Image 1 (tube, rainbow, N blue to C red):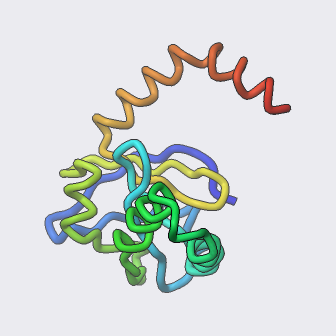
Image 2 (spheres, rainbow, N blue to C red):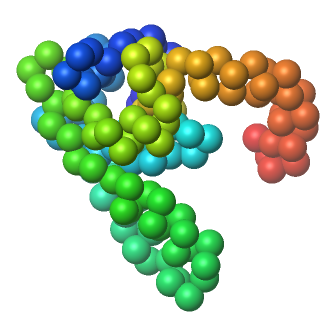
Length: 143
């Protein structure tokens, strides 16, 4: 399970170090794809296979299904994890998430989200301000 928030930077070669706490759950390869809210989603290969199978089983006759599948599947890249726990993010994924130097790694149970520090801070501020309303909506779902 991935939980917690960690700050990092991208080096001159485009590498980002995965937080030490997360490395034990990952192997030599991970999958990174376009996420939501201008973030990137990082999955272990096992978790990625589960998600990809679910997406592949959805009906292609629905426009939103096709769009979401394209976002997630076509945007995905498998990345090798080096001995120092670093991955190289492809340029198109860094551009999508507006990541230039500072990055936030947020653990979200079965995935890690990668954010530009600036977008993460803005998102957190907005979400924290709306936390009561969000809790009300989740309460109606039984959370």
